[in-house]
Image (cartoon, rainbow, N blue to C red; front, side, top):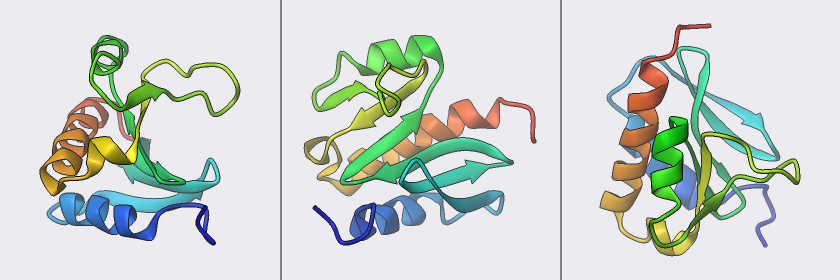
Length: 112
């Protein structure tokens, strides 16, 4: 386990994927690090997992991919949130793909 609540290397890879955006803020939450787009949670790093926010349909489809599972932080699956295990984010292009999907969804939400 990490001395911090999230994998700093994965967090840096997420930051790199979001580097061209000016509307992203980082916020500690869920015991990890969340990336907020226009005030809406977009993605994050919890422990060694990438967390992505997707539409309910996209999240269901994502669960068919390897190394994913429902985000069950509260003990019950959260609709539209998926954890991606380290094996699913081993390559930088994997991180970019997941982050882009989360950004696409969060971009369609009204700003907070």
